[in-house]
Image 1 (cartoon, each protein chain N blue to C red):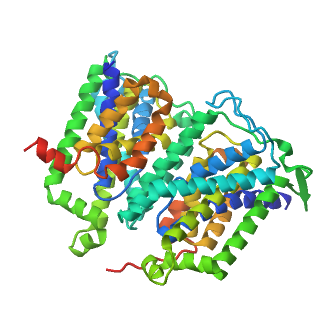
Image 2 (cartoon, helix red, strand yellow; image 1 turned 45 degrees about the vertical axis):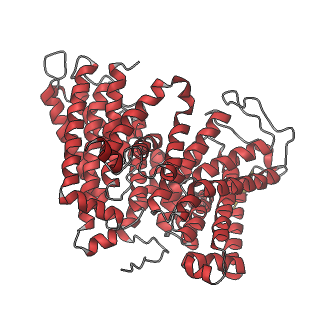
Length: 310
Length: 288
């Protein structure tokens, strides 16, 4: 029983990260119908920015060796600033890798290639600045919170609980905003039909920028939280999560917000259930789900089947 | 500077570029070229180091055994490509790109965790069928000529036109009676086989083989070959593979910046030179 509960707790907290990831992809996908492959790189950026924000110094292998901010911010402030920084960076990605192609009405394949390029440039610039080594956020970043909590026999790290809470809060706010507010409805209108939305007086370019900023914010927040939870394994660690996030995205259904949540939790739980002696195969779980869903239900668990018009 | 070993790597680059180009000519992005190359390399590495009967008595690894490896690698890659392509290519859009990323990752995880394939260390002391790089150069040049001639023949054949039609508008192509699923599957399978054949020769050449050959970096590098060279004519990816493989070696100081440069090529290429360096217009001017 305790083992099951432990798997559930671990699975949900990992799944929450995947869900945040897939949600970041989903925001952009639902507006533009393309995937921003630079998302994983923004996640890495968020983790490094958070690390700098709490006063961490750059290691000896980077071009910025030894450099640190003159002040150390509390973790929540650093995390929020990192999120804002990533929102800005994603706006830059939009301006360089997406907008010129949108003006030309280019084929979706090209967005994929340019955003992949933007991600590779970003990750490797980070590698040059920070070196390839891993970084760990200080263990006392959460202040007075106890590092470990015990819930009905299952052990839960405070940072895992924080991840779950942030994920739940983001999901709730985002869903309410999309469904209830004018801005959210405008975003949905653009995702349904950009031309009609423009005729109705919605500035679709502004909506695209908004979706990129929100998606960057999510990437930055989840990067900082995961950096605290499992440490930053080097500039490529966001790419690994980013690739898994793609599996989660397809599993949940491209463009579906509840699908991103469900997909994330399913993959997180499945990974947590992989027995210890097979733990090396854990990283393949998300991709096995991806193939299974493409075979059985290509539109994903909660996605709409596309209607092809001739 | 241009020693035999660099030339061999350039030819490997050109072949991998062609492997990425083939599905792209039918409008499909496959990022699994390094994955299929890894599979081909493992077929060669496992057969030549574990099956004593293939070794022969001479100091050099026998050529018939090498041919057998090439054949087996092609069969394995073809089976794997059909396994992935049959369900995925029925869907339109970007699913192949995502599925090939997934394939790369599954291959990497399985190869890393399997003691039978040498785990993370990989396989060492792969026997040499050729005494010096010249032999590898010849073998790769033959493979490249065959692949290039095939691409040239396809371009003039109705198949090539069907591929271009599917690339430009899959729906319209289907309406004119083109079986777009079959065309896409054919292009993807050809890409997989070519990458696996290249992997066999590469594994012997490098003498050691491991799962890192199929990393995400390698997918980016091979994609850069095609984006740089151009995907409208088969000479484009060949040129891209040759030049971009030689570039980091010729410009030593760029060392650390290699992937930044490749990333910038992928980022800015489609914006500034949508057709790459080798465009049909350029070829028409050069080859009247």
